[in-house]
Image 1 (cartoon, helix red, strand yellow):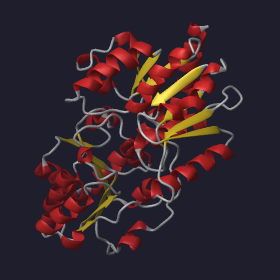
Image 2 (cartoon, one colour; image 1 turned 180 degrees about the vertical axis):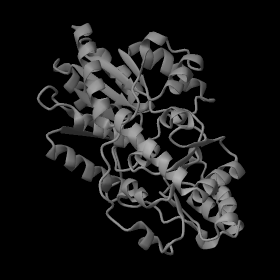
Image 3 (tube, helix red, strand yellow; image 1 turned 90 degrees about the vertical axis):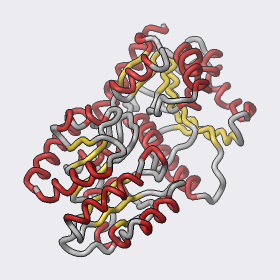
Amino acid sequence: MVTLIDVVAEIGGAEVLAVELLRGLDPDAFRRTLVVYRRLEPGSRERESQERVVAGLRADGVRVVTLEGTSRYDVQSWRPFARLLRRGDVDVVHSHLFGPNLWAALWTRIAPRTAFVAHEHTWSYEGRPLRKLADRWVVAAASDAFLAVSEQDRRQMLEREHIPAAAIRVLPNGIAPPAAPVVDLRAQLGVPAGAPLIGSVGLLRPQKDFGTLIRAHATVVARHPEARLAILGDGEEGDALRSLVDELGLGDRVLLPGFQEGGAAAAAAFDVAVNSSTFEGSSLAIIEYMALGRPIVATSVGGTPDLLAGGAAGVLVEPRDPQAFGTAVADLLDDPARAQRLGARAQERQRAEYDVGVQVRRLEALYRELVSRRA
């Protein structure tokens, strides 16, 4: 089977999940190949990250093909992928995210015996009419299964994109057991002993709405003056968020240290883990917090209520409401026993429902079903 994605890296939920699902497949039953098509600049951090991931996959026995496409219109770079399909021995192509889904929908037409699985890792489902049309009339029309990561995403695909119900399958995200922290995050960030540490891991982009989170922290600090907020990640909004911290006079109460190696495991240091997104599918960051047994405050968007069992395994608040968000965090800091109970419930739920091994076995069953149907 072949997994197709534009890039792979150590950050970015879809990219991490695609690699873990491929790596987890039974090597005795599946001949695993990864095709990565977008060219990354030599020497860039993204390129170095991808090279580390690729080296690890090859060590695990996964074949990796890099196409080095220079743009989305570089059709010539796809020739190795076309040759791979024309050999006639690829049973499944599984693509991740919109661009790879679209390319796979076009290229798998030359391999009629190959099953095609398109994997949507969520978007806002607002605006972008051309994308909606492409998802419905190109990707869904060509695919044997169109995967959604949550029931909420499935509803969005039905109601907003009008994709046929029979085409959609739901495969929630899952993660591998978290590694031990590679750094003492509190010491590295200079958090005073005994000071509460609230934290979030993610790319600094509009979807994550870290501006609301920073404003919420002003409410937390009013009740817990020593509390620190750490946002671990890089991205386009970094400068704007630092300006907001200065504007609100939060100073060293908000820490923006950039991308941290082992960021997911570093979340074990959080007294409260938070997610302020305006939309989500099935957030890997939240699942990582669950695996670490952290008490969680998150916005009630997308698949997050399903992850947190409607609020039984974490606190849900409305998006873009800094006052409510800050109050929820401060309330957990005031009630450590409740925070501990919520963290324990979240951890139990993650192990039962959102472990990558559970999802890999479901995916293997789907592949077998689709290959049998094609045959």
